[in-house]
Image 1 (cartoon, rainbow, N blue to C red):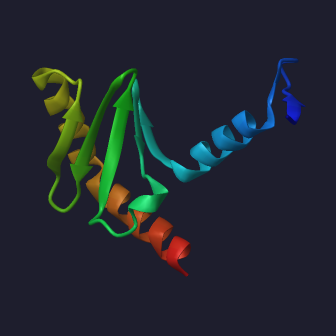
Image 2 (image 1 turned 90 degrees about the horizontal axis):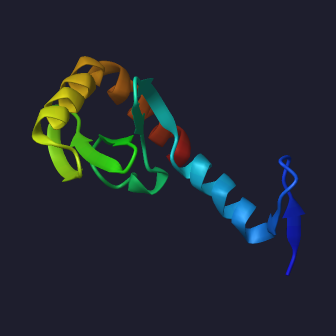
Image 3 (image 1 turned 120 degrees about the horizontal axis):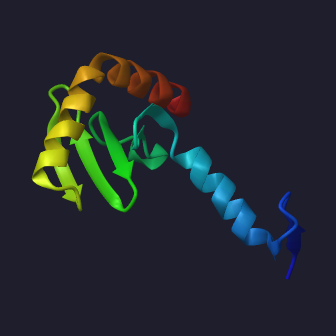
Length: 107
């Protein structure tokens, strides 16, 4: 098995680093706000515009235009409302980023 020594000096199987790099590329972050990371999943090209929002082990998916909750995994109702307000406040920027990203991915 091929191994790769990372900058931290730890030797890991090569496939681990390749998957990690691919995962970061396939989940482009479009906004960070406080503890929240807002991102796309690159293989979601056939779905309507939406974003994923993560904080620690919690995750939610919101459709854009209009902002509507699609799925919640772990956020409390109070925090989910806070996250939805965050997405709504940045909706124009998120939609612009969505269309730009997926237009480039398709063409």
